[in-house]
Structure formats: C-alpha cells, structure tokens
Image (cartoon, rainbow, N blue to C red; front, top):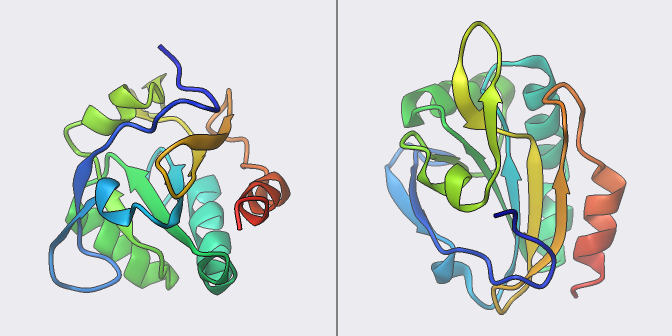
Length: 160
C-alpha cells in the first residue's frame, strides 16, 4: 500500500559507509526532532542518480540550515555506495537497503530496471517532519525522470 502525506513514516535502520569510512547504522527514529529528506534512487553510477545525488550534496548545507537531514537510499551495497560517493564527491549519507526491506515498506520498488535487474528503488522523495509524519511525497513513474528539486526545497522550507 502506497504511503501518502499524513502517514507515519515507517522506521528503519540501515548501514552506511558515507560520508565517513566507518560503518554506521542510521535509524529514522534516531533523527526524531529533525526534518528528514529520504531520497530513494535506483542505482549508483547511473546518469540521473549521479546528477540527483550531486545536486543534493551541493545543496546539503541549505537543507541542514532548515533543520533537515538528507539521506540517500539505494539497494547498492555499502562498498559500492562508498566508491560512488568518493568518485562524485557526494557528501550526503548513502544508506544501503541491500536486502530491500525499506523500499518494500515505503512501497517504492522498481520491479524492472535495466540490464535485467529486478527490484531496485524507484526514484522517490519523502519529506518527513520532526514528529515522523510524511509531509511530501514524489515518486517518478520512470527512473530516467529527475525529481522536482524546487518542489522538494519548498516542502522542506514549509516545515521550518
């Protein structure tokens, strides 16, 4: 069942090797009291995903100034995400949903992707407020379509 604005965001804990080289587990519940931007993306090192993550990294400080944590989530493993972040100077934390639990709980599974790959993340954005309630949702129908950066920024600005 698709999550929508006003729903409670499902909690999760996922591993990350970015931006630090030390493995950390990041939980949504540990960020209560902050606004959170979840950026689901299909796969590291692909064109649209690289543009999306680089654009968000370039604007990371602007989101932090709005009391928002920005997290990228894909089914790539932590080592792939680390290489992706290092190669592209991505500074936002990238979380590995290698087991696909979170993309299923957020109902953002891209059944067919490219080169025969199945069940990667759809390109999707969830803005979650300080109390853990979803306030903005964008899910693109096609993984080649970029997110609406202006709509995302406006949604976060309204949560201040």
